[in-house]
Image (cartoon, rainbow, N blue to C red; front, side, top):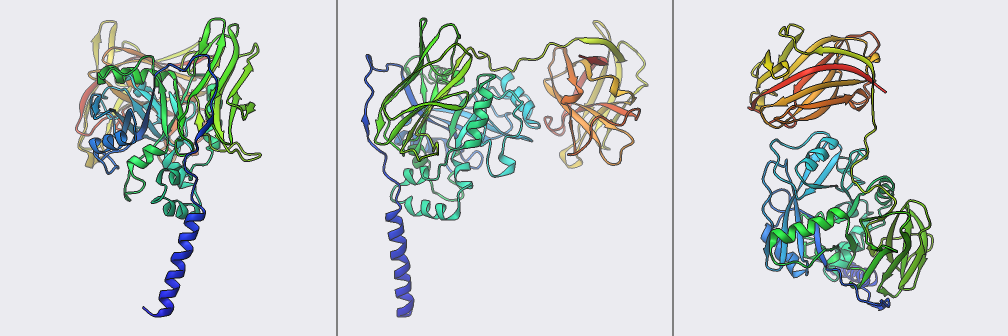
Length: 561
């Protein structure tokens, strides 16, 4: 190397070293302002990590390696969420060293990714539309969270905000670095060897869209916000699992302390998460301290995740041990309504329904809310106490057209399938008369199998807005109900997947809830044009080479108000 090249290389190294040192993120601040409380907060609080990938999917660490990293970081629990279809039974909860390990899942849907914990194994592969996966996870006893909902990567964004999700990721490490300019990523890499956790947190910006969407949802129903590590440590070994775990964590307020029994402790943990008794703290910004957020009333104190009646509501109490430059902020229905640089804030709620949540920020920038150091879940005043979206009460107007009731003749129906699958239809006796029986044996995946029961010539859909029928199967499965425009060019269909159990279920599908196979397909079909009604074995949720039977009865088109 020439002297000139050597001097140039040395100069670059010096410049990088200076840039690294001069731009180092601050170490965690020390809490100096401690709130005065008549009694110390006695609710047990445990810290953990959620949304972590192992070598079972696209992570680089084994479950034990990840649990050891969590233990070194001082975490009480870690929840792994490997990509999968739900057919693998989750590992039972267990302790590894001092850390409780729970096995969750991340399911890919057409509307984004859905995280779940506390679920049972699924009798069929989960997938397809987001609303169907949300429904399936709930049926399996799980708690689900929309992952990286506003990722810059379109395929990762959550798109169906009408689905009754249980929770939302307000912060996601993977999303945090994807939207950063290249110079900030370079600085983060330079800072990482010196202050790794602080370097990770330096890439966090306030997730404005995610918080706004969450605030909107909480005004109509209960929904929990969690921070997701989304830790993979692949393809590069940085940031490591341990450093991600040290940068931030979710704090869960328990009903009782952990006992050391993994099954009981997992149930205790999941119960609190379901209720929303959880807040996030970014430890790389400031050292952990006490945090208290509740509403005091004549009936006692109401904690985050719970509901207090408008009549009982009195005073919001927000307290935290504050580092230098810290600020308490109180939000009502998503709007900032009070703030103070003191370690205690009180606010009278008034006599209206509302949703309150709290943030603690450090060194706030003028005219900017900034990334929260601490973010609570809401307390609901007079808000709905259930997570389910209320379904409207509907009545039929009397307009009803039967496509099948108890007929023994099935000539109006036909079957469709590709060459190597087997399908048959007949009318079989049942307790209440007769029912259609669709028997199928799907071929292997290479042949793109499908099997369908079809009724051609369904006219005048403008007169009807609901398809109603009874259905059962020889095993739990999903059925794709479809409408096909028989005269349109190309594959023009609208679909709605429904759950089928071994016991008869009445299913009602609003036509407005059906979605087109292809984008920009108009609805409804042109008046008077023939449309086929199809009952299709849902191959998104049925494995190739599967055989089974579907029984369908009392098929009607109706008009509901």
